[in-house]
Image (cartoon, rainbow, N blue to C red; front, top):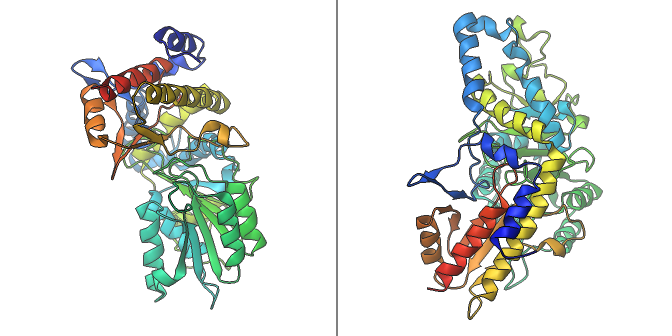
Length: 428
């Protein structure tokens, strides 16, 4: 690789996905497109969103409530249009996916079904410093059972003075506490460091211990390759406003392995939209779940949120999920190369890259878009200077800048420009 504008432009010229950048609205500063490396926080708006929303509004206006049942595209079947493209992105069967609510609501619903403390087997094993939503979900469910979170939650953290959690430590903790565990739940990708966790090996270890394995895929869905069904994951939840580009507060989703779909003994919070479709409108007492992941649905969905989600998923389908993954790897490789070049140009090391390097994994797929930069000096100054230069990145206290170029709308030239701007700031 080369640290030159010409080389970056050559990569862009060969990029099979370059046309998709034009499908998104890029934020501008003083009339100039900014470098938007915040897909890990909120994906950009695609230009087809207005069309999809307008279609739903036109159906509502023309048919009213009958739009659920009549017209060219009845709303009652809308969900099917979402789970098909999501099944490729998540590596799941369409019947194992339900699009509903938001991430934290779905985590609560999954805890109702899959966290069942039984005497001594009541502990939850998770990553240290999980995203706050996960922590609050755990705490509130434990409070419901009058259990003390500090006693019940087992956190696996990195070795002293390190940033990354070793997979062998996770597996060892599962084995050590197997007689006390009721649930193992990790992120797919750690929000702070960008570390990708080994979902299949964690799931396998949990199952060998007789424990349910669930995952928060907020930073994984639409980012890294997943094979939830093949890996035998029990359940997972995600949001769709980050890498899935479906809008702020967008509708979330759940995966529930098919082995649970017809289990009449499983506990759940029920709602009328999860009732068996063939008799739903008979309004009978006694909940009868849809025999799929849709059985966990509660309320009538927001068709406007569905519309935003569909607009984004249509672009993924057109681009091709494998093509997205291929560019993600190359774009990420180039970002690492440029950041190393930035570190070389300073008199002393000012950036510690705390995300695992691409070549640190046996499987090259096991890395995402995000790279987290631990700033060893002047971190907030660098962040603010980047912002003034039209580079949109993310600041995390106390001293981390997260950058996440994504394949559908970021370019190699942007990565080069970012590095050039960083080097200029650090040299001042």
